[in-house]
Image 1 (cartoon, one colour):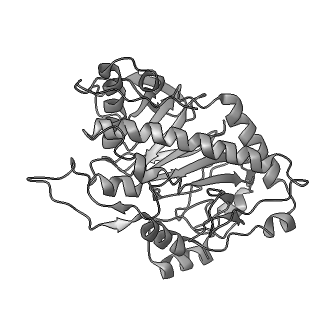
Image 2 (tube, rainbow, N blue to C red):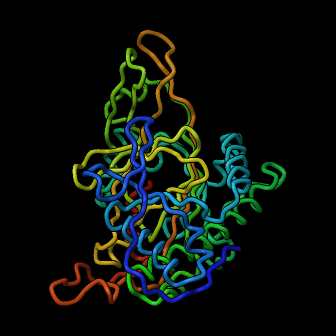
Image 3 (cartoon, one colour):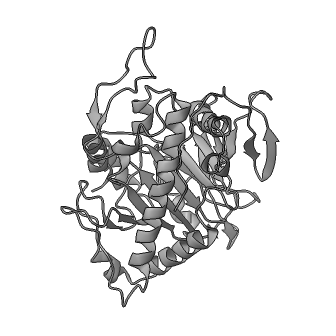
Length: 384
């Protein structure tokens, strides 16, 4: 259980360190050093174990500043044991190794449920909300990945799709434990955001406690580059990539132009990585290289909407790592895994501008919308 005790706040925003990447180079910098794109690296334990209001506000302000300027943060010392993360990855890998006919029986069926197995090519990730446009993109270049979607297991209306225990021993219990752990972390981070936005620290508590979340297990199988060279083909998006057998660092774009729908996304990457984040100022993509022991966290569309765009929902994509050369004209990408926990407000929660995010000279940008209406609408257009 993560500590979530509340302390009052009085301190102004503190300076904090950030991480930015060029290739494999890691550099630490403060926000005032030039215009380089920076994803803040934040020690969440300072918030969880804070013994003074000054300590707690420092971390809360750093998190809000990260979401305000970049839309992403790295969280270290976040309270989720590394052993639990590794075990969850192992069980995810075992699931995707099951025969196709076993996984097909667990197929995703309804955007209101958003549960079950999604086979390769069924999802088309894009910023477009137009169903006809997405259908054309999917027919032309389906996403080359598979996923397993898991929601709260006690839901009366919508049920999770679980493989038989004999076929996937420990899979269900592992995923339910991880779901609970991620929800607890979501609660902590939302309390920090509330504090950083000058709200009561527990402002969001009764708006997220129903755990209307989605745990997504993702598998990107290895793929030969001749398939990815087909027009528009990607693992999770609309942009084509580049390929050069003569280049040591040849990259292919596997996803492009996507943001997330809810409040936060907690992303757990394997060592292969591949996540890239769009610099909001230059519109260029930059690697969010995995840092061992950290979680990449980004603000979603509903949090941006809730905050009147004070907090930024930033576009991001997944690119392939360097290909393994098979011949002068052919290569193969390595397989990749990731786990994403999509955090959402309660299904019936009304997402209207937060009281500290509008006022004189800052009008509300968006009409109220419920979480369910917004997310179901987006999911309906994304899947066949």
